[in-house]
Image 1 (cartoon, rainbow, N blue to C red):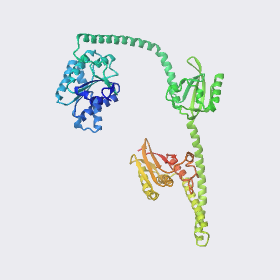
Image 2 (tube, rainbow, N blue to C red):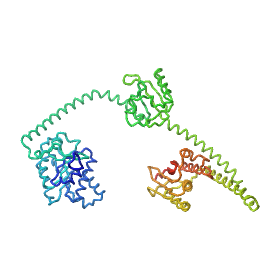
Image 3 (cartoon, helix red, strand yellow):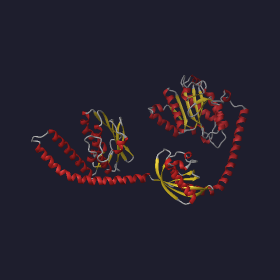
Image 4 (cartoon, rainbow, N blue to C red):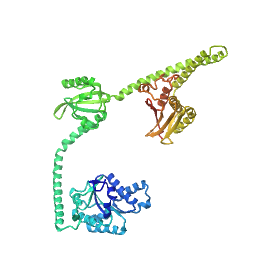
Length: 581
């Protein structure tokens, strides 16, 4: 923006032609983070332009500024050129703000730095004793500053805390500063006139004294009102404390609860906001409780609430409700008739059954896995020995004349049976106690070295991205290697060329490893079946490879997740617990 426009930035001002005559800027700040940013920009520009920089503030804030400068590449030698003054020492030694003394101190500093054609920048965080009337002294001080600025190429920012500085003080300061700066913009001060920055007339001094007197009277009245307010507060305290106990109890119970009057929600506790994924009270207060039921279940919930009204008895029902995000979640709803704010109401206790349903499905899956393991052990042991004999006699038969195609078919089928039996034995094999501490990145590197030559033949590159080089897990390394070999080979079989990237990172007490390929990807229907025994998309696959991977990872107290998009690729995410030491 241009300086001639209504609002502009501090950098616009300090880089403009206007600044050649000097600039006196009132900065009313509200946020410390913005304050530090603006101070940093002001000082940084001064160092870059070889200006003299004077910084008047508290030690703690100056240290933050120094750290920020160091982080941005400035040397200690450059930072030492900043003339730092503690603002308590400068503005109110002995807890007094004296305009003449403070002006003299600032002039002494400026006199030491004056050089021909060299700009001096001053950043001052102005403070004063809050229990004393200082408006007159502040006005005199700022007048003295304004007189010195013009013609000296002096840029002075006078920073006042907008949260603690009274409005009447801020408005008076606007009279003596040509520019007014907020946290994010600068504009011309609406009240600045040159004569305001001159020596105060007797009439002006009397006006300031009157303002201070009126402010003193207002403070006295405010104290009286505060006393009256305290008395009223004490009278209501007993009632409020009793109500607070009940509300706190209701709000902190880790079960979702809502209160309705005529099916309109008038109260919801904290857990209800969490369960229903609601961000504000507007999404609950005043809404019809029946609206949370899916259309096909609304009549069921309505009938339930009617019976509570009619019988005035506690009733319980299990049904699905629709969350704010339009997710459908199962709940157990226990409805209790109560009185609320003088009206008949109902308290609905809502227990989220999601985890219970998940646990039920896991129990079913666990049972299936147990049965699959038992079947696998029986089948493998029954067919493995006969297969050995069959293959031996088959080798003898090959020396006699026969149709070669028949032999090929028999050989392929026997190989497939042998593969299935081998994988079934792995599936049924009990978990080994030979667990040791291994670095997962070392395991992955060894697998990449093993598979890279094979991958190169089909134009596939295997890469690794490790956030850390040392991430140790307790595992049976041969089994973990088997998991990653299976996953990487599966990825290779879906690709003509491209990259397979193996990423590993630490997250809290776990390591997360991702196998990301650029293959054909899978549809959601196929992804849902991945890991199911004997399900495969490969022509000669057995459908047990990924099932075994799941079993191995689960034995190591981890999990596998699959994300895939057709035409983009597939990501397998394996989560394993890290060593506790």
